[in-house]
Each structure stands twice: as structure tokens, then as C-alpha cells.
Image (cartoon, helix red, strand yellow):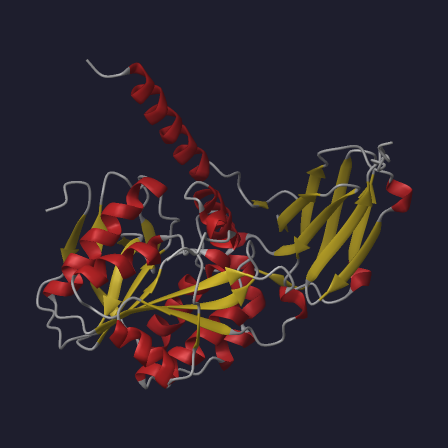
Length: 249
Length: 138
């Protein structure tokens, strides 16, 4: 049991080997924007939240109701992990560990992390490309089946790296989908690109039209979370994703 | 007894963490403006400032003032914005513009600065006042 972090589950929720989508704040808030769009479109409800002294003392009010900022929303078949605050670097390890233990106990069959990768020429890119990384052969095969370009060599840094690692230990297939993104600005266009790939891979039918229509407003609303996230990313060695590995075998 | 180095290391981590959450307010009620996200790149011969300006439609809506060490950006939103359920006082504010004053990391030549606005992103190039030159070694 992890002392630093726990998941508090709502009563009466049943799960049927759910597919999991992690969209915690990261590069371009791609995952956070995509997760929020999934929750809104599918009308998902809160099934659990995270509690930890490692989080800042923040709660969120939504429609007059006090809500925890780091939550799992979903139904029997799909779970979405999302946060309205940047995850402090000290909370990343316990959060990933507790999350994967909990998902394993719920019989999660497949875990997706949605994020961005920094594209310096993002302004010149009309439709961001999506790349994938899988943790075990089942995940890699799935990426191949859906013709998602994969990364052969390189570093990945952030909570999704740990989620994939802990899922590998539990033999849960996990995939990270990364879209070309503005590194430091919220990027709804990149979020739309990862959602389109996710749609194909798990048979969702989530339209991204509204997401793209509201892109400007999302960018304005996402400024504060982006600032927090930028500060957090600087401290977790995110820059190492741009470095070349030695590639010895 | 704990190693004092550990304590200082932990304290530094804690301060860094707190700093991440002590971001200044990104809006101002008095002049009904929002603060845009800005990136500053300190290159060899120039400083490049990039500003995200969603909801700004055309370059004519942007005004820039540059001095040797300061850059002031103002931009009108294409329509006023108000979030009716946000906060206590915020819900009554109709935001009409972006505003940001950037302290430049080095002195620049304001008269040689250029700016381009494309797809909601403003890019300002400010040549440094003191340029570096390459010397041949003999």
C-alpha cells in the first residue's frame, strides 16, 4: 500500500474490464483537453478521486459542488483519469503506482495515455501527426494494426512513462499516443488528432468538431493550467525527451 | 540525525513546488484584460518572443511598444468574453483584450525589431544591441 497517495472510490460502481484513458496535464495540455472532451461528450461521472498530501491544498467548485481536482471519471466500460491542477513532480511516482494497482484490481484491459510532443514548427502543421509507444507486444501489435507510427528509439519522460512501466509489470497493455503540439501553449488541434486515433483504436465515435470550434476559448481557459504544468515539466527532466539515447545493445 | 544536505535539498524541492502554484493572476479586473502565454527565446544574436493570442483576429488589433529592455503587447479580442459561473468577482468582468509587459533578458535594438502574426500566434524578433562576431584564429 502506498502511504503517500490513495484512491477513494465512490460506492456502487461496477466495472467490466474497462479501457482507461489517462489525460493528465502535460505538453500542450493535449491529454487534459482530450480527456475533458471525452468526459463531456460521453457524459461520464466521477467514480473515484485521488487523495494525497503531495497535492497543493486545492479543491475545485463545479456548478456549486466541491470537487477534488485529480479524478477518475467513467462508467462500466471506460475510465478517464484527469486533473485540473498540474501534478507536482513529487506526486508523479506514487500517483502512477497507485493508479496502476487500482486499475489492475478493476480488471482494466487496456490503458491509453494521451499527450503531446513538442513541435517547434507547430504553426506550419495543419493536422498534427500522432505517434505511439506501446509497453508490451500486445500494445505494440495494436499500434501496428491501426498503422500508428511508433517510436523506435528515444526517451519518454512524464507520468505516462511510469504508467506504461507499471502496467508492463502487471502485464496490462498500455499505449501512449503523442501528437505534434505547441510545447507551451494549450493545443486543442493536437488533442483532436489524438482523439481521432483513439476513436479508431477503441471504436469510440467522439466528434472533434466542437473541440475545434471552441479551440480559442479552450486556449484562453487553459492558460493558468499550462503555466503550472510548464513549471512542473521543467522539474521532471521533460527536456530529456529531446535527447539522443546511446542506443547500445 | 538527518543529514543537513537532505533537509536543504528537500526544502529546495518544496520551495520549487510551491513556486509552481504561486503564479500571478492571469487577468486584471481594472483594465478588463487577460495575460497571454509568452515564450522568450534567447538566441545568439536576437531575442525571440512568441505570444499566444487566441480570439485575436487580425494584426491591426495588436499594438506593440518596444524599448531597449521592455516589450509591451496589447491585443483586442474579436469579441468580449465573460464566464458567467467563474469565481466571485470574475463572473462580472467582461474581458476585452490581452496585455503583457515582458522584461527582455538583454538589451535590444528596438528600431530593428520585426513582428509577424499568424494563426493566432505573434512572433517578435528583437536583434540584440550587442552582437557577437566570429573571430578567425591564426
